[in-house]
Image (cartoon, rainbow, N blue to C red):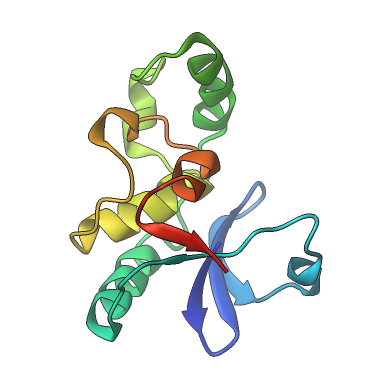
Length: 129
């Protein structure tokens, strides 16, 4: 999920793909969710990221990308297994692509095609709140 201001987020769902909505109450359960902030992000860059992320609104979720990430990570592969995944989206890829379009690379280039939430969490550019 990406906080976009005024109590709203943009995120991916299985049924509707990329959507916006209110912050869910379950987010406050500390044992289930972690909140990360990108270090040294100024308001201009934040606005660029949010605007880039909103461009994905309505795009469908890539189930194959989600599923293939598991064997990719287990096997240590850096490339996607299925070529059509490159133009599709899932939650961590949505966040990564939005920051990248604003000129902020959150993870090394060799991890970008099958990016996971763990990649974003361990980025030197993010800190846990």
